[in-house]
Length: 296
Image (cartoon, rainbow, N blue to C red; front, top):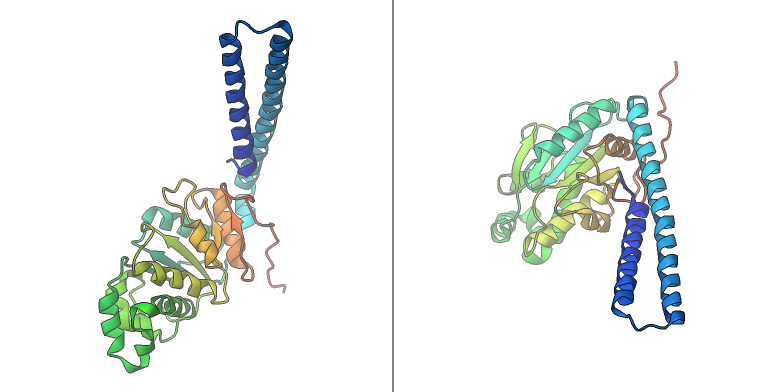
């Protein structure tokens, strides 16, 4: 598990190695150099090699630090996860179809943290049919303010709020057969507000009418006042982290490993805030706070 320091240091070592290759190439092609010029070139190569050795030592140290972090998490995972999400209602929102691999990771994380099955899981179908949505909402006076292509971001925000807050969800009710690809439990069966939300983008990045709609959806979740985290696996073809961050969602980019599951559980169990964790972030984990249990 490597962090940003590892990648930067490794790249520096590669660039210096390339520099040595260039210097050696110059030396081989410059048979006519005088003694002073040749000595200066040899000194440059020697300094570059010393720098590579120092950088390699740093890379080895960082690699060992990250291995130690991973080992620590694996050894203490059960103790650190216990009861972190006990009694919490966690909802999961997919943009695109349900990714069963990621859903398995999420179910494991919630269960390991003492939580129950996700209170509701919605998979939003994209791309959207903006014209059909406009027609549906335009025919309902109470919802007509959300009709029109210039209202798609506003519409997405309201859907995000309704997803978190539960209750009657009038816009979801009006559009569910147009935008809900999958719902667990069945659509409308879960009305209680969510204590925390996980967002997954399983679809490709959206363009056209779908882009402002999806952006608003993320923003609505991020502004709902509960912990909200966008997640992905450590090796994702198209990262959604930038759009999650813009919508004020926290991110965890390694939900497929124990460190990511622990980071997710910690963030979901604490008051809403925004931060980034994982193997591709500056911090592997949030501060590991104790789980407070009722006394008596």
